[in-house]
Amino acid sequence: MIHVVGHTAVDHISKVHHLPEPNQSTHITDRQVFFGGGAANIAAGIATLGEAVTLHSCVGDDFPGSDYEKWMDTAGIHRQFFEVPGTHTPTAFMFTDEAGSQMTFFEWGASRAFATAEAPALPFVHMATADPEFNCRVAQKSEFVSFDPGQDVFWYTKEQLESIIANTDILFANQHEVQQMCTTLGVTKEELIHQVTMAIFTMSGDGSMLYRGGKEHFIPAVTVTLCDPTGAGDSYRAGFLSAYVRGYAPLTCCKVGTVTASYVVEHAGCQTHLPTWTQMLERYRKNFDTLEPVPPVG
Image 1 (tube, rainbow, N blue to C red):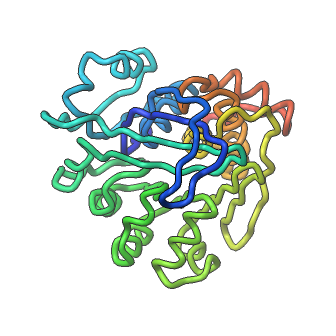
Image 2 (cartoon, rainbow, N blue to C red):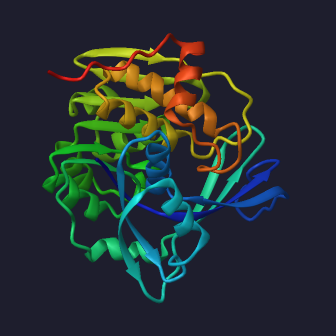
């Protein structure tokens, strides 16, 4: 069982010609509403790939009986939710320009309950965007920890990052988040990498890097027709973690992650075009090689 901690949200995704400067405006050329939230995206990706997953999240009183709840039931996502009366389920407003750059405004809503919630002790947990202090407590109490600060990286203090990284086995981040973590901690990228057992840094369409055991490995992105980059990082993590619990080597897990991400960016919405394990295997074979099952231990 993979446990995922963090936001469940409703995504309002808009396309614009360009991201405006302060005190300026721009035209929205397309706007759609989707199921989202970093943790929920990852949980949905893991469930669709066929792995057991439990999502630990906060939702408002608008969630019970909603289409989002019905979708999670259909996807087979186990849930440990803090339902907060009188609040909205978190909502994200994302704007993507023609160059693929993004800007996000996030209403925390019910997720503010993380600050005082009891942190669970979990055997295998991936911590996505959530309250920094809550994530610190989860990391301290859990056995195996995967951490992804996401766009909430700016909310972490130096002390919180130091605490959580000290308890992290796998660190995920994109190039912007890596830069911010290094700035907050006052370290170089190399020093940050040496603080964890394994680091995976994604670089949008330029692929990703795996750092482990003093070695680095480049994983190229899978070439597809890009519709919307939103959710690519979440689906990468879902693919990586699903392969990891199946016993695949980290480099192979990164390839599974990049293949999984290639499906999501072909359509708008973070949970609208998630691949099954069979679909992932077919595209993996076309881009890398045949992925053989890992022999069972013993």
